[in-house]
Length: 313
Image (cartoon, rainbow, N blue to C red; front, side, top):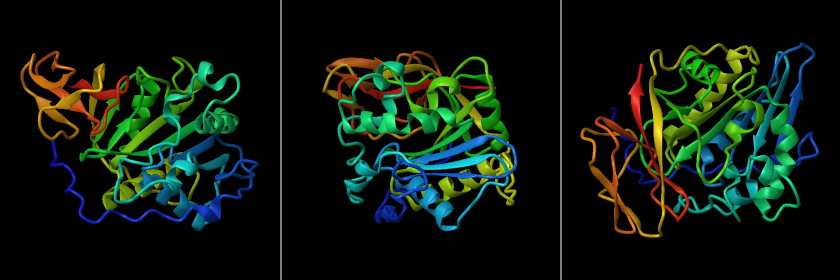
């Protein structure tokens, strides 16, 4: 495993996205560009969580460069600008949302009926846009240091696209979160059959300048793969390693605490090792060579604390 990102001393600045509010769709901060040549609808999304500025930099860059698709249609979306407006760059774990996590609301149950929060109202707004996309790249970042990750879901087509693109050195095959459905797992993206694919990229730590670079490269590579742009960046990582998630640890109490500092892709050699305590109960590794994936530094009851997996061929 490569060393984690260097601890941050000077957080990267957040971009000004206010100029992109009034869009060419009827939805604030959502832009759609059509070509005259048939092709897929490709969507690049950022700011699902308001405290993840790397994706906002990538989308703002594409809009500033006036990128237009050579074929099909291109959607560029800032998902939760309200939460982004509340982000404090010096406190990156804050500003994740206003009322609730927008990335747990993409189920029929949550999207039906009258919205009960700002995020549910925004999800209803974004629903027809997300439903129209054939291919989605959702740009995120992490609270803990660690290398960039591509979360491909559980479909074979998702895993194959992640390997073909080589956006990050690691691919994570996971089924999602107990507390709700992500945009990446919405509708046809996670259907066993069909063509739709969504990839979620964890570009690095929230405020790291390196995360912005990863987001920019991933967006360019994704668009080039679908022949959306003239640039043809090569595969960034020729042989990404895949981690298959087998267990998701969800905090059962407000007293969830790890043993020492945690970062992603730590490998625990022995089964039965204690990695945390949850209200006094030990959290144990289920098997040898267990990979700890994306531990959350700030965990509330009912939220995912860490995912456990193993490397696969």
